[in-house]
Amino acid sequence: MWIVVITLPTMLGLCAYYLTNQWALENAAAFIIILPVFYLAVAFALLVFKRRNKASVCVLLMLAWLIPVSPMGFTSTHVCSGQEISVLQYNVYYDNHQLDSFIQYVRKTTPAILILQEVSPTHGEQLKELTALYPYQYGGQRRVGYPSGQMILSQNPLYGRNVVASRSGHRILKVIWRATEDKDIYLIAAHPPSPRTKQLWIERNEVINDVMMEAQRSPLDTTLVVGDFNLSSTTARFAALMPGFQTQPIASWPSFIKRWLLPFQPVVAIDHLWVKGPSINTQICQRQAITQIGGSDHVAIRTDLHLESTLE
Image 1 (tube, rainbow, N blue to C red):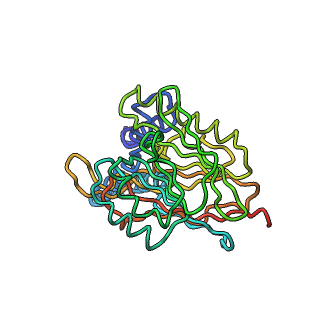
Image 2 (image 1 turned 90 degrees about the vertical axis):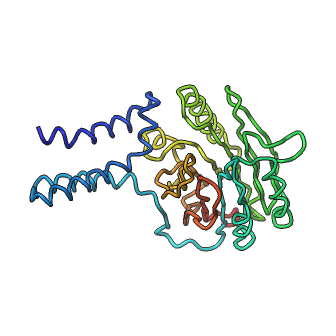
Image 3 (image 1 turned 30 degrees about the vertical axis):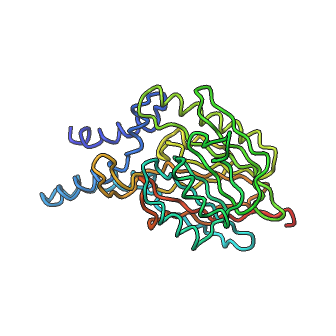
């Protein structure tokens, strides 16, 4: 009877992971991090009462759940050298009135490209301070606006800028990014809606499917997909996305709890990046959360990429 009770949370966690046709369960899978914390607490209590065998079972269950829920940082085991280029992605948050830390970080570190979500016209005015560093942009222009709240700022040219809409009207950005002098990348940026209701969950999945189809139809040998996808990495849906692409989840949300504005440790990876190149030489060297940038409920994520040059 005891083993049934103690494994019940694991059964619920597995259902949340695999039952991708149930929107409430899939949303719950984002917080699977609760399970190793739960089993650690139970193991500690059992040790206090000298139930060592039962505590050992809880420790094993805790370790089993730690593997899929620890996307806190990533550094490649390969030595990246040569054409390393940095991508900074950030959900600015519409109610963010503290862009100074973001602007200061960008000026200090100068990532090659900034891919932003939840950008308001007020943010766009503030971001004009970066025009000298990032003369190429998509989003904020007259007749373009901020498609689904998105904006791209780049040090290098952006060609073939285009927007496509999902059936529910959410915008997907598509551009050719001249990442280096001899390397063009097909860049897709998206921000599907947060699945707070079943209808929004359906709309989010539509956008994700459209993005995957666009990536499969890439006209170039190197494709980059970036955005806040509102899909946790601890779901079966995420695991099935972008076959053939490389990705590394990083916990980026929530940095604070909106209702009470309480600081919080990000535990969910929803700000994703996928890359695919002509060979294994195109790879993610490092992804890291930039905690010194404040004001948003998301943490900015910096990704360093090694791109295979056409001259290699």
